[in-house]
Image (cartoon, rainbow, N blue to C red; front, side, top):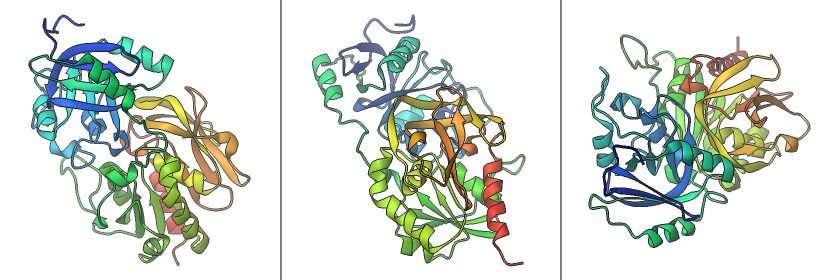
Length: 387
């Protein structure tokens, strides 16, 4: 417990094994249960909290200075925070950044998300690495009244993420068009007014910055819900198909996503590009398997090797499941691999412009190491357009 923790804690984090962490509560009051993961990024806490891929999870930040640049509307990756809660070492300080429009504490309270500060996050991170992502209950009570036995029971009662389709909970309710491009100084976000390619993006929990990157390389983007059928996708006569990031167990989402992807690929020979859950959806559609990881990959400093060029990219990752490289069928090539643990980070078909990566090229941790993937997608569509 840090020196800033009051004599009577106002927040409590209970793990399913009975371990208890006390600290200072901020943000919303109440209680939530989720899987606990840790993120090693030094920046981007607002983008992380609003990333739909974190549905069903509470995030422990290993970097202690969380909240120091405040929050602003431009950095939201979706309309509201999706991560269930936040765990930090030090209480957020007053924001100091010219882009700040609100402080983190107020933002979390207004958005209904619980947070706890004053926690030994190094100890918590070690526990996650050694024993896997635990099920936890997080409670915030300004009076400091906690029923510990009930919190532990709630953590033990959490069903976990295996076998759970969360994409249906975070996808869009109906289709929409997207034409906003990446942020650039000094104009900020601008509109794509001269698109060259029609792209259907299937939303399993899409981040806004992915859609901006597609628009920036010349795409006229139509976003469809995760449940979209092959008929609905092909009705837009796209030049390319994009499969977005998202949360949950890929095998569960694949129950309806995989048949759609296979049917589209059978009917149209067009470029297909997937990121994160979209990578896993494509792998399943091609005949591979996915597996639950011990503690997953969450951070902006993950080295990934391009096995075909030898290039090493510094990438942003957020996934608790991975494609089993040993299950890749003939004709599907492993293109990228994590240098942390050797897990699969990319695949492509040998004879078609169909590929995907596990990491997030739009997040720019390199900062531009992986942006070429969007340019490759655009180039593949350009090659198929009539002269």
